[in-house]
Length: 276
Ligand SMILES: [Zn+2]
Image 1 (tube, rainbow, N blue to C red):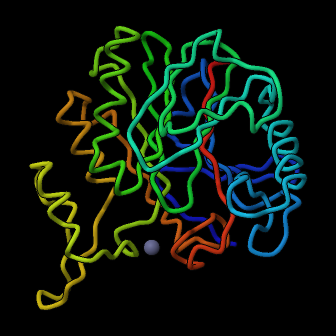
Image 2: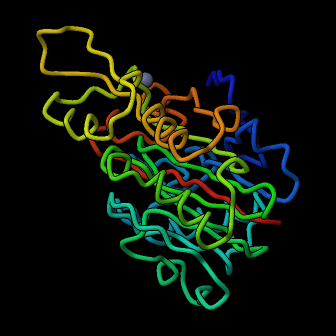
């Protein structure tokens, strides 16, 4: 398996493979990663590190995958906080009293597509299979966040809502925020029907995210990471503090779960971030 990227590294701990963003690796107060398909126990379409409970995999296998993954990455499973996403734009801040005990499933927050915390030792996780992850870090106030930004969350401006929460709840300055976007389905593979373009146009952004290879076709290719980047720039995040992953999940579907590459027969990857 050949992995090529200017923005991300692939790392291995035992058989567990995971990606990290080069621009976040330098912060010693945090740990982050994006899971790959490598190193788990799930089979078939879930092979092998499936971290999603909602795609039909055997629950015991998913549980075992979490154990393997958390042990490899040294994440405290008791302090893992997960989303239960709805392609919405609600963000939840995690405080001490939100850290429940019980099974992983009982520690999911439903209807939530983004999480933020400033508590040491808590690990946040969001789920992805083509939809972009937004990693957000306030390097001054030491706050970390994650969001799931598929096209619906993107046009609902979840990126903007994430910035607003950092500012309102933690007193962050947008110019201190470091953002890493992806990995996700790239513009190379994210073809959409032109019917949905008005959803993007109403954001009023420069159309650098849009490519129409054939003007007569009712299809267009969208760079979702670029849309999110434009939204973040509008919110005051600095250009030099935003990195877009160059790893396309569909082109790399042997390594990462991709909804489109498999017509939805797939497991789920997860993004993780924590303050250490
Ligand atoms: Zn691609």
